[in-house]
Image (tube, rainbow over all chains, first blue to last red; front, side, top):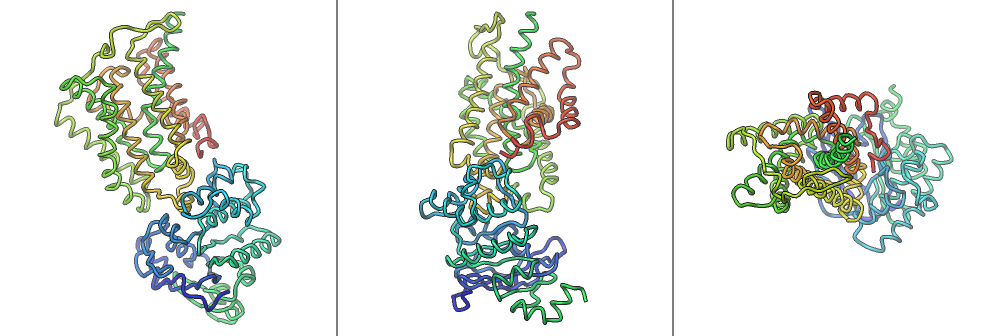
Length: 240
Length: 293
């Protein structure tokens, strides 16, 4: 964690409505350079909606989103990606007809304006350890490998910030440990992250800074240990 | 035997043309996941453009092709940006697109009937010369050969665009998965706009040569052509532009057989094919694996 780094992402009062339903109701979150922030909360609390709004997949209805000193509010996804924010999807969405290499190359070609693209793709595949499967068609990968492919594509755009959406869901304990190590290695290269996760133990291996959301709003911010002592957090997780 | 050989050869030429008829609809569906119900009306507009340029200025239909491409790119961009981004942000874009493009289809038809009346119009078959050409002892009009070559050139162009250009690479990505393409840094709206215009231009090119296959052009021909196009792309594979050529060939040969041997039943063919494919192979003959590529 880099608690003394300057603010990279600053979200204030973010609102997203679907018809009459407020999926985000004034959410605030800030992330410093190189920091990992865990994002937890029960189903329907607005975690993935927040990721979708920050990454430009959904258009917000109010509030502000600043990244690296510039507003990214209502910008289209491709511009947000080129400014340095990228994300993974909860359900991986590889380009099924393309090979692993072609998938990642897409990120290097369109999402990043700098460096040797071939080298960028090679490095991204090496980080997620898919380099030996570079010629496989992405549709033939396992669910876990498809998640890693999504991460590699995001890394190929050379992000300063990654929004990682439930990468641990459906993975074995061994796979979780390995992915946690990998995310920490990515962090060491200076990439900040918001890691959305139900699995609080997984978040605990990554960071001591957790934001808990409930009903589209902030409920708590602190360490996992502090969260476990917080009555409101315990109530929304356990329904007591 | 002569009729059989004629039917097969003519069916293949018809099929290539009908592949072109469906190509624009399929490429738009592939990128936007929307069915352009005004597709047949754009084909009709292409035929009217060719007819009037021939009547007033003596333009050969081949010369109308670049004019139509330019016109439909000029019209397509503002039309796309006026309608589609707003549609994509709605709760149910697929359903709304049906209603919206149906409305566009009705408006085009009404305006053309108002402007020109609902008469049939045609360009003479001998516009490319009166000589025919022979294949396996069967004689065919030269206009069919020209139409087939233009349709093949259109397929060749789409293949080149998708496989060998940077924008085509991005287009394939958007076709495979819009969200993933977006977060790879691709401007999906720009790609969609270009492909939308390309779809309109391809439909208009089919319209220019429709006289030589369908016989005549008239303002209310649009909805029927949309149905035929839909049957063709469902037959090939929805969302896979190059699968359209297979759908077109099957449709072309089948319709030629119907016209040769059971002519009074020929008009129900697109509907029968649609129902059969939906019941027995809803993913199209090329199948799911190819659809996502």
